[in-house]
Image (cartoon, rainbow over all chains, first blue to last red):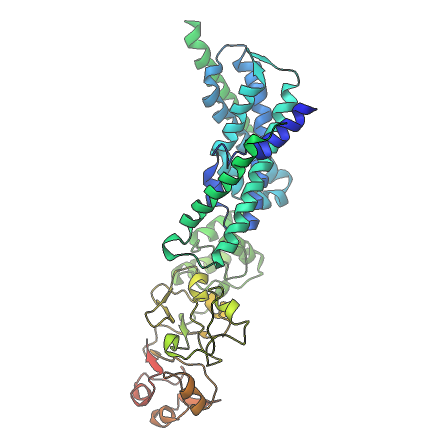
Length: 200
Length: 265
């Protein structure tokens, strides 16, 4: 139970993918101008993180480790993520046009999002020891993937809220637009550093 | 040797497996779309401006096919493309005159302020406070909401801090017409040789009030009305209006206007 809480709090705040690990910064700055697309993007990221976390765990456990080629992890995971996103996109288009429209362009966009690769690599680092999955490894991996996605969406939502307000604020002309967004991002990151001391 | 082969074989077989899966899925989960939509879409501007009221050009193409919207709902599609879309759909469309947006105010920082405004730099926000910071209640609020709203970058701020329409870029999509809280934009004929002029004022106040608020307003002196020999100029509600059907472009009105609000584009 402790471990589960630690994973949830850890991936939401302490090891937040955007503000602490600095992964997935392109959507963080690219899709955070308005709240609505930010939510769609966040949902798509959660979706892809969980599904690719699931598939990569299986591939790592049953293909890479038995063959002792876990150094091929990065390239295999990229392959798996790209394929699964494509596959999921097709399935969603067929089964639920409503969800497809809600996720829209963001689904194919995150194929190459480094936060997704990050969470799968992290899973294979943390929940395997000496080539064997630790107890409850699979569940932990899914949990971490899900809450890493939630943390991503959370920060994206915060940022988009701030940037919507910034649009109307009286910023110095040389800092308008992206520069002020960078400054805001770094201040947010500093704030999240405060979670580092948290002991669970 | 097997150490070298293992990763190669694994990766190749994974690649083949995934490739086949995707190929199978593409067949299995294929959603048939109307080829007409793609054909129409390729003829549309692709700016996804949303001026037609649909979410992007894809939505417009679907609405066209369903017969929900008229082809003219998209103002920015090129004339020859419009024609070929009409052929695709088997429609007859009559040619319409190309329009361009124009701003009926040239006050800018020359128009007097009623109060000092220090809030959001946005026309919609300032217009909520006593109808805007300008003395003239019809005039441009100079915060450039239209500049931000234009999806084609066709509106720029001039040195006198009122917006100017860059005609070459304007597609007459009508977004500025709707977004301006003072309703200062209108669409006027573009290429006709007779329609090179427009009235750059919207004030329906009497001359004295206009003069006290702004040096470049229409004071309803009716000189243009008298100078025009074609009956195209009319002063209604203390504001000069041009009938573009009758105007021949003789420029007589431009010459006589004392405040120079009848402008040549």
